[in-house]
Length: 297
Image 1 (tube, rainbow, N blue to C red):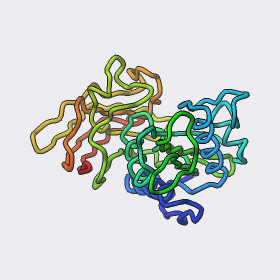
Image 2 (spheres, rainbow, N blue to C red; image 1 turned 45 degrees about the vertical axis):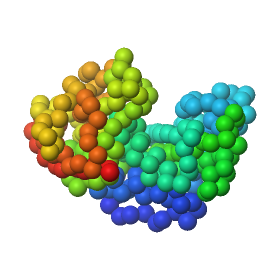
Image 3 (cartoon, rainbow, N blue to C red; image 1 turned 135 degrees about the vertical axis):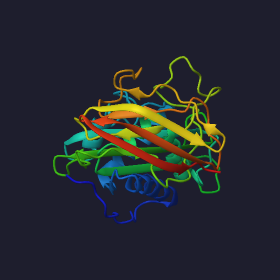
């Protein structure tokens, strides 16, 4: 089905932070041509169930262990179906958070972190159609305590479940289109990445040697994407880039043949505009794109 260009209703069931994350994901997807996602109650439930399972079991993972407290399914797909989502054609889950993080403001902050992490970014820009979000905190934050965390009194987590079903088919970009994130006019992106799992640069500790905000490039699934040239420039000149990551050299075998990831070798500067120029072929047809995006303060 075609890309959704009409904004969905604002979810009345969301709190301030869930709504902020929802709007950030949707705003950036729509701006860059990936299409809006619709809020789905079953996916809200599966996201909340998994967040609660992580908290109760003091474990950070996309996989749940059968027999543990709060178990609703070993995989995100199983949890979504158990929550009532129709058997689908694709499923995805992203999460971020940790201890010592206040809930207030984490809707935007957490979404920004996920949109900067290379593999999470690729998942967030996939051709899903529905999304469910859970954002909760425990401890003595001014916004109130939502959950009890095993072993810590200060924790905030954001979980987003995304899917497309046989009743609500994936969004599909046009066959001759190449999309990017960031794209022309994107603002308030992060400027560095200090954590990602799996690590897109094996052997490099991102906490001490962070990378810059990646550029995600996507052709229609099923069409081969080849990047022949890419440059990024800022106020001080050309930005050093790692070798463009594609399905042929992805160390974690996550990317498909229609995807590519351009990663700056060092953090970008805050509150700074960068120009990206990329060219290559998709499905054998030539393409070229140039755009400007701006990092957060």
